[in-house]
Length: 197
Image (tube, rainbow, N blue to C red; front, side):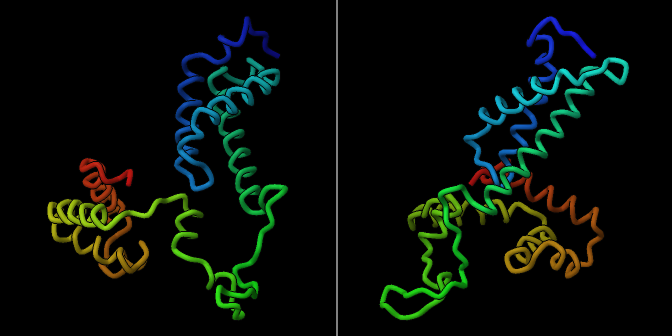
């Protein structure tokens, strides 16, 4: 087993960079929010430090060990978050959207039918856009689309009503060509500053 001079030897520049990258990857997942990045970095650091007693230099380098522990801990954190999301917090009661309730007029209805757009935005942690912002956003999107080659414009149009598999099949595109086309579309939107909206 390994002996280390201290925490700084374990949480080296390599480990700090790896932890930062892993945390940034996690916050892109739906189970997390972007504001959790620093907390996830700290949690990963603590988890790596708690596993360091298992490091055996005869089995590999410290960088390899840290990378494997980080991957394992990321998977564990994601599983824990999915479980919490699935079963809820201790004081949270989960209700089926198929449950019969009384609507705002006192008539029987399914719970899902009583939810409003505002409820959906709250659950999705999104904000309602006012009409001016909607017009501006549409104009910006139209401008980006106009700069795309016609084949990519067609693909964007199909993706408004079809999923990726259906759109790819409709166009008869091989998977690699389709993936490259999607990457080009994303790059165009990102370069126009629309990818974060």
